[in-house]
Amino acid sequence: MTDCSPFRYENPDNSAGFLLWKITTLWQKKLEKVLGEIGITLTQYAILASLKWFEEKEEPITQAHLVEHAKIDKMTVSKAIRRLEKKDLVLRESSPSDNRAINVRFSAQGRKLIQKAILAIEDADEDFFSCLNEKQLVAYGDLTSQVILHNS
Image (cartoon, rainbow, N blue to C red):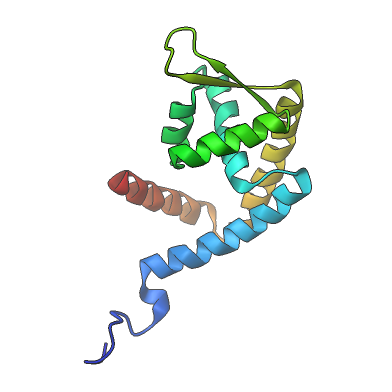
């Protein structure tokens, strides 16, 4: 860094934040292309995939739980669920056990779509990260999980 430069690093790729920005942008482009062919956005996919996960693990399926799990802003989740509801992919219902909670569940069409989307996304992820070997993938997962945990 020179006296007049605000940059901390000589090379931009020495910045973990900039590398995160670049990898996120590339990954999102790839997934947006895949999901565009299916007819949903990346945010909608994150919500639907989380919903499927909760269903399989028999976890509560409320909007609040989706917000916490996917780390998506509460308002964004609410808007996305309304759009998914308009596309007849999900149904929203008041929780019988808590009047403040909104339960979310799949419609028949949504259940079919998420199966297809998950397979397509997992193939895209595998392709995207294919430059890493198994040991590197484990290290990547460990490191990113640590950063997420520290910043949650």
